[in-house]
Length: 358
Image 1 (cartoon, rainbow, N blue to C red):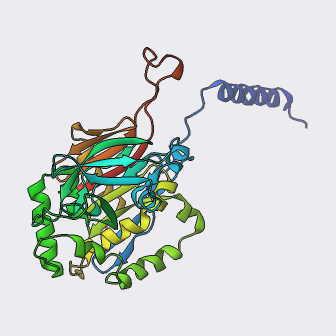
Image 2 (cartoon, rainbow, N blue to C red):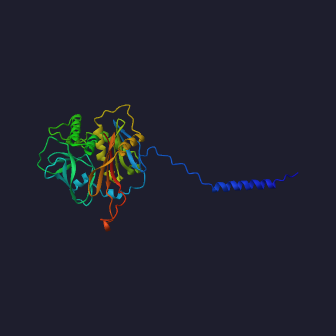
Image 3 (cartoon, helix red, strand yellow):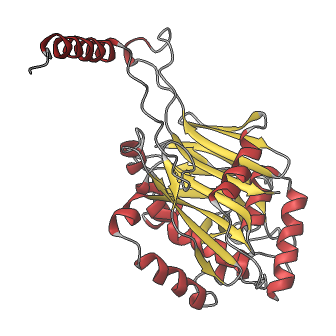
């Protein structure tokens, strides 16, 4: 005997169709949030694997987003060593002999980026640049500096040349965030441990060790590790997070790979100058990305204060409990057609950021 299956089948079909329509009309569940990259420092930067050389850990920082808006501008920036080599920059004592100011003459058609801690020798006393900043093209202005040779105030020339060296981290920190006496104290401490004391107390001999072969063995280890990185990662590098025996000491980040590349060798040698006198601890571990982010956050959350201005850029600093930060950014530009009344444009990109342990 046949069963009357027709009405049942029709009912099931109607129910199924209704359920499908209801699902189609109901709002879709939001997709799960993307997994966070544990190596990300920010939305646009990330850390690569650390490089370990004795007590020093260098963790490369790469840009992860599209090319920075300021990359093209940064490519036009000169740095101190190349500008001086081309005789486009002159630095000299100012007329009244102020220890903490020098006259910076940029005769180039491009702005010059200078870093706090860059060593310049000559004049009446060897100095280091006192602020991270951008000196505009075709400009003469006073720049802040610190003396790193307290026992001399004589000289046959008032001109300075670059030592092609960057002071070690603690001295760079004193230049950016402290005072002249703190700079002298750090110079004396480094000269003592390096056995480079002189009658005038200059930092010059320590600076010379960055290129005379003293640090060559350590530098080769860094170069060998960097050579193993994929070309794409090398091309995206914009800085380093630096640790000493596992404790984060410095973070340097540039607005573009182009500017970083010009200064990378100088930076690495300054890190080695810091680490060479620190015995490696066997139990020390490289800092984690969380460690680096926590270090940076300590300074980021502090109140921002103006530090130095040029017509091209502004330098601001933050002083946290455990770390300080200096940031150089281009100044917003106004419309050329009505510069007096036009509203300021959106904030220009950051040129450089430095975080330094206190």
